[in-house]
Length: 248
Image 1 (tube, rainbow, N blue to C red):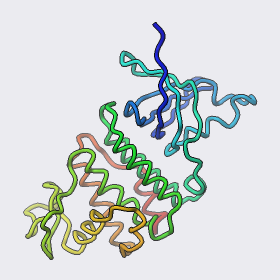
Image 2 (image 1 turned 45 degrees about the vertical axis):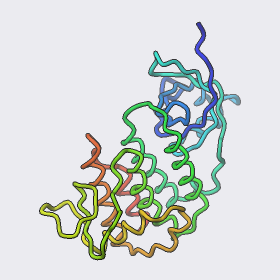
Image 3 (image 1 turned 120 degrees about the horizontal axis):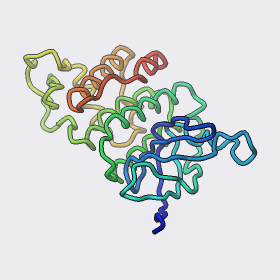
């Protein structure tokens, strides 16, 4: 029995060279969740293969026609093309650094292959806004993405009935009235910044969130810790030191 074909959008998460001319690509697909594909011949220097490997850069949004079988862990792609042709995301060093952070953060959270179309829509929307963003929106996008991504994995910071002067307990994942009895927390000024980010629904509104460099650095560090506390075997984000240096 032949393996059925399906059309789906996909976000490239990771690419590894395979053999002389091929790639193994990890893709978060709209239809099947995270999947691995072997893409043959795209690294050839021939006319047919030339220029196609660059479609599989992490962060690329693609329209795919894929073979899919639940019995297999490695699938094949029959057709692929850009779903979105970015204007700046791959050519701008700061925007590319932000997208690399977003993709790595997502990849470390995806444990199972189940589809999540709402998550895919959120990712697509964030990347499109990042591509077209002003400098002020771009600078806040990593923080916005991190605080809202947690919702899709079940540990969104609870921001209901937050009183002035609240702290954030990173272990409990909520705002609290007093300093927690452990070191994993955010002080009230930083907690207020997180509250602002949680209440932004459209990334264009990020231009109105006024944060300085030091605050962004502290919040990025705290959010990495937050994910480590709530995601088993999360580790450290390789993209974060690069992002910090670029945004400074």
